[in-house]
Image (cartoon, rainbow, N blue to C red; front, side):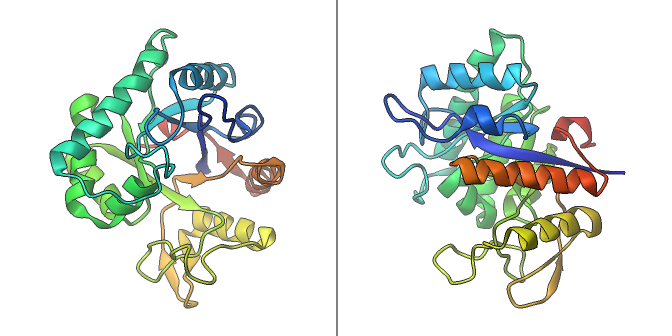
Length: 256
């Protein structure tokens, strides 16, 4: 029996600025990564997004990023290990407060943008994030790029780890994502993207950009809900996975 999680980044609106189609994408995903106010979101948006995910029976995770609203958290910022740990703990705590009043247990933590990308390659930063999560709540699941330093650090820290894959991104032979700055980094053919995802789940393989097959574990698939076309693609992915006998479920339901 095959099981996989569908996750999406939500709660990215801020003040008068509305981003994403959260209510629509919540119909198709099993886990939500909610921004915690530093790279996106604000207290009111966080509260409303937690409520919406709760009503949709979608599991919730913290989505901490760098304190970088202007850059949407995508810029890489050099920080010390202690700074990184406190950044992550602070943002977990912020989201936890909105969950606590509803009696909801947080499922996971998935770093955002620059923090996520840096931690995928930097073992020191990865260790800081993993330690911060473990020290906050050792039952939390760390979600990170499959085959990365971040997932390795999570295992070493004693956390349950969810390996995340992407339907619309190309992979390097070492398992890292091809930089968005390079040609061929994005997969625009939806049929190809879906077939790659199904293969990742069933065969634990993906074709790298050089044509070489590489090993990959797919516990969770990242999908996007930025616009109507993106939301429709999430629906298409879910339908395709289920037609292959793959069960969509939150990671807490099947990770050991």
